[in-house]
Amino acid sequence: MAKTRMPMSREARAAYREIERGVDRLARSIREIRIGLRRAERRIEKDARVRVRALRKDARTQLALLQARQREASSRLGRLAAAAGDSWREVSDAADAALVDARKVAAAVLARFQQALRG
Image: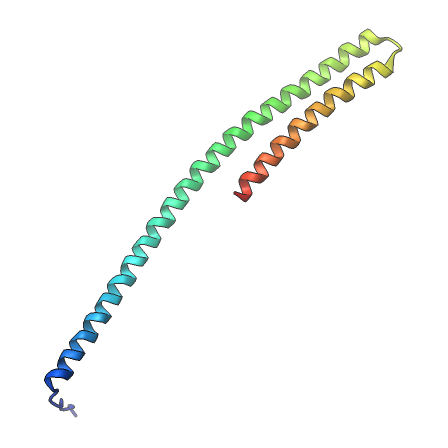
């Protein structure tokens, strides 16, 4: 059975249209928010990719520096061992100094990358 519509007063029709417009504005706002969220997500993802590339490049540079220091410490140890003869205390002290320096650099690099992950 079809429902018969009750005639609405002019005030009721005006109120109904006002509510309809409010619902339409709300739907448009929801649509705009969704579009804005998608844009923000894409921008954040793009920025993250750029940041990851920069961090990788920096990590490669820092690792190369640490590897160079490692090679330098190894060769220095070899030269000192050959030159020192029986004076192993001098060799040990020189190696300890080189290793302490390399550890400080490694700790600084690690701290920078941990900070980048937090930031």
